[in-house]
Image (cartoon, rainbow, N blue to C red; front, side, top):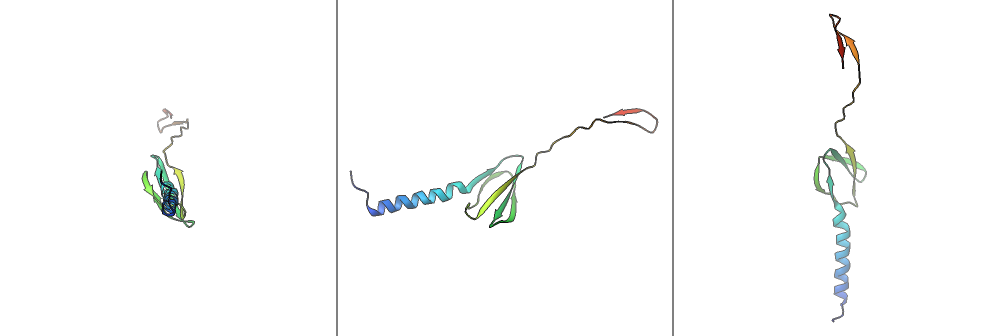
Length: 87
């Protein structure tokens, strides 16, 4: 088996650093969420659901839930002609 030369070691290190920087840059925004992307701490865009690539050392994401929720408040009232209304 041949020994790895200096060039081989350098290429392996470059490949490792590249994978470490590129892979975490991909992210998904799930259905029912929205992502605010901050670049150097300034919010510059809001992303709908989907797959995205943003370079992670300079930008970060804040996820917000935007699903519609229903709140039911029971009530009772009377109409103009005194008929009971239940809700």
